[in-house]
Image (cartoon, rainbow, N blue to C red):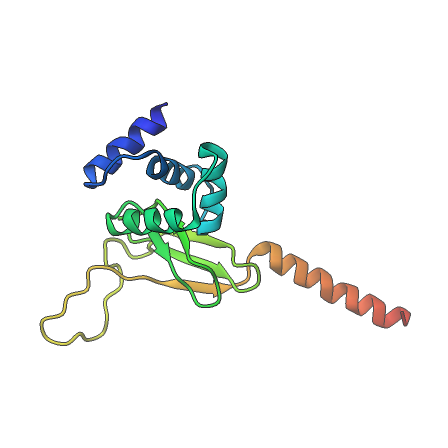
Length: 158
């Protein structure tokens, strides 16, 4: 029950009411490896609570994001993904093929870790969000296997 107590404390410290669905969502996010969609969170919460509406999940995720307990990654062509790793200005790598998303630690140091060339007077950057796009190792391996398969098919005529 340590996780639940920790979740309750984090919710209180963020100024949020402590409810079973909020605890379940926060712990579902804590217990996954990677970045999950709202539907994946809902499935995890369903196994714990038995029932929860899609709207409740979205409302909780929005509240947790606004409170700074959760980070929402919104990238073109992919569903929003959520994580509890917040406050350290890390970046992400996203596979164009499968959507796998991994954390990339900031290479330069402290936030914003990248500085814009020129900001208008009065503007101040406090965070930089970098997204690297490419192919994950599984998709690269699958693609190289497909190209070898194609060459064999061409050579054998079938």
